[in-house]
Length: 287
Image (cartoon, rainbow, N blue to C red; front, side):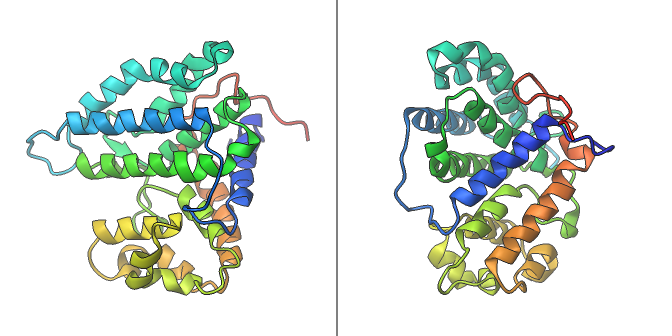
């Protein structure tokens, strides 16, 4: 990756992110969209992961962070992932389950370090990208992929982060965009493009966040930050504070995409965990 060899996987992945970015433009989480059987099954799968958190309460331990009960939770996913993915796939595509399950297991954090970061989030997007490649998800599932599946994934990840006090992986601290996520800021800023009243400067206003978070992914993220962090917003989330000064949502969206390409995918620490298989191939793209 460092020699800027464009991998098919990278091109596929970025293409997938940008297609969804275009698809959610100007739309609310609560808008009407088609929900296919595969989408329903994915929501069920995420519901199972959520239920396992309830069944695996944190243990008493001296250190406040990185609760070891997370490893018990993860071991269950490790064991069941292939079966869970099999159910989501059409019968004639089940042979792809082992490969696709790898991405699912990579998408929930690291069980050794008990941390979670944008590399894990990227693995979940790659998981969804693979489901598109095998034809389990289709073009007309776009809105449901972001608003129903990815949004549910975020809810489960927030619950994991909170319950087991997970550490941020590869975090840049106050200089990073967010401790844990990145994609919902991209897609969430796209949702706001051409909004008649809400501008970037409004998301630092807690009243706006409380009033509109059900409709906008970006505000859901801000709401979670506000719950998890204390002190002035400008201090604990400096990058986001800077973004609130950008005049338009389309400029915010373009800037975040640039930042994502540079920080998340071109920096090795995040992508080193990526498993390149036959679905997201590692063939160089012909110049």
